[in-house]
Amino acid sequence: MVSREFAGRSRVQRHQLVYAALGSRMREEIHALSMRTLTPEEWESGG
Image 1: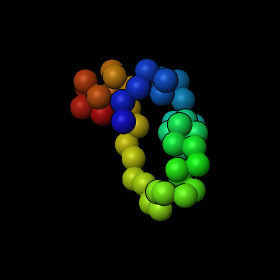
Image 2: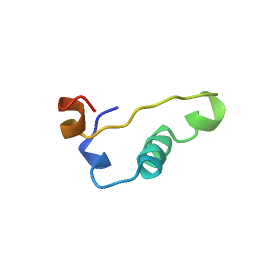
Image 3: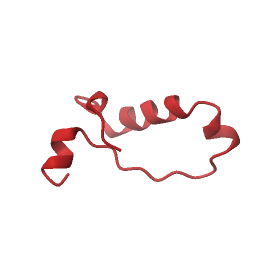
């Protein structure tokens, strides 16, 4: 996932943002999630 919202945040904080966006789906519908969270600049540089 690539977002400007990840800038200046730790990996844990980035994952917390994603979990918050998923809301109750994280508890009810999604049982496992692997993610790579990058800023647009990290993505462009090959992250």
